[in-house]
Image (cartoon, rainbow, N blue to C red):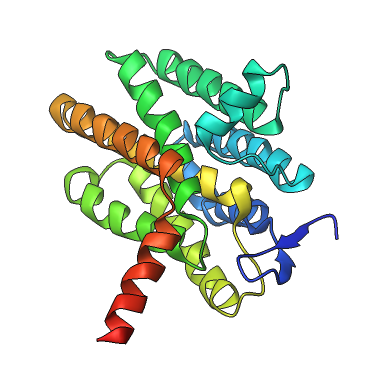
Amino acid sequence: KVFSAPNYQSKRVLNSAGVWLSLSTIVGSLPLFIWYRDLALLWLFSLSITFLGLLDDLFLEKTKGIRGHLQRLRSGVVTTGVIKLGYILLISFGLALLTQRTNWYLDAFLLSIFANTVNTLDTRPNRANFFFGIMLLLVSIFTWDNPITVYSYVVAGSLIVLFPYEKREKTMLGDSGANLLGAIIGLNLWGLSLGFRIVLAILALIWQIFADNFSLNRIIDSKRKIKDKR
């Protein structure tokens, strides 16, 4: 029961498929190391994000949303979510500075907020996977020759393997997988123009505020009920 948790239907399933996703992607991308020596840094980054997400998966943190974690922090309670968010932000800033990004503050913010954005979507089977796939296809139009994009398609290959297991509700990504997918998307966005990155950062921030105040699942369910009545 250590690596399991109740899903949205209160059915207990494996909740840390993100660990397998991270490790299988590293193994699958080993041949790329011949051409991209900096890939080792990407592996370390992926493992770090996965581990931080795993903390939430293991401790089954019940506090939801950035606002919820900050409210607990103001009450003197340090949740695993606060620890995770803090370290993801630090890792993002560290990576942006280490790779000498010109707009390192923007890129670090973009990476960290997308890591959490995908996490807000991972409330139903394969929803986070679909978002990752769509974003990857759109971004790769502009960054198709970027090593990070190539690595991301290895991630997508691992997701295809996971797809039927999530669909049958045998497993779920958990924070370890959702945070990883979001961070990988954030890295891909680094290949876009400054204007694109600013717009996407603003949109992600707006989405985060929305997700902290409203339930996407309730909105979707209510619309389905309206359609059924018709």
